[in-house]
Length: 376
Picture 1: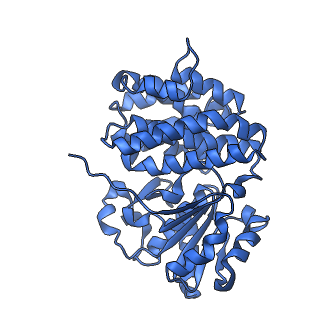
Picture 2: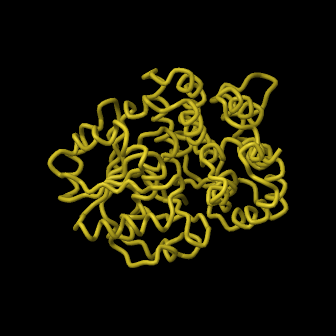
């Protein structure tokens, strides 16, 4: 027996950001906090969103780091409570949206944050009293705007998942126009994040045919349009389709991810070097695809057809070539990862919540070999 559920309210298209004031009103917010990062706070997008919010005049927190952490969550919660806020608007890529989710959680649930981590039994502790959240993505990659989880790095260095249906944003406002200014490298990295989500969730062994169909369609969109979006960031059709692929990847999170994310999560928790999640996924993906093929062989042909993998090639080779075409690094070593970091990364991967839904069981030795292959 399979239990299947979908998911939240989504406003999607060019110009959708104009609906943000109606969304604030619909959720009964009077004084929201707007969680973003300093790059967005100093650019043209924040003023545009603030104009759309209008009369509600949110409190702005722009202290989201590249990889959201416990300290930033706590600082935003202090501001939320001091200013009498009653809801959260998260504006940005996956980092501000994940931070916004954690703020919505701790605004209504007692700390510390660590007790709500999935691997520590936190799912049952997260109640429906999570503060209302509106997510407005400005990249096309994470799908966090419709996802039920947030990834936060704790003070002890662990990057953990905080996951609950109550953490899904109440409303997602997906306006591809907000992504028109993304630079090529960020377009490539976030686009590969979306593609990886679609591939990993499709290969997850959990039974959810609706999610499989969404993942397959999202993977096809991402593979078709990512090169165009990287080469011509002003191409509106490419931006629309990449944002849809990102959204679809987020919708399929219900099936769980796999070893790519088990490996990228602890790597993303490193303080030095600071590593982008989407780029990590792109670099690790080929090794994991080779590892999993024997245990998901019936699904690989459909993926290869959807991605239009050329005859004589395979899915892992296709991803390696795609990474090269869009300017992403070929190995973890090229990203600044050193071999002395790997033992701790293996420990993190073994404990990661995504490992349970990898199609092939992954033991310590398997992760050691997968990291070795990804290092190059």
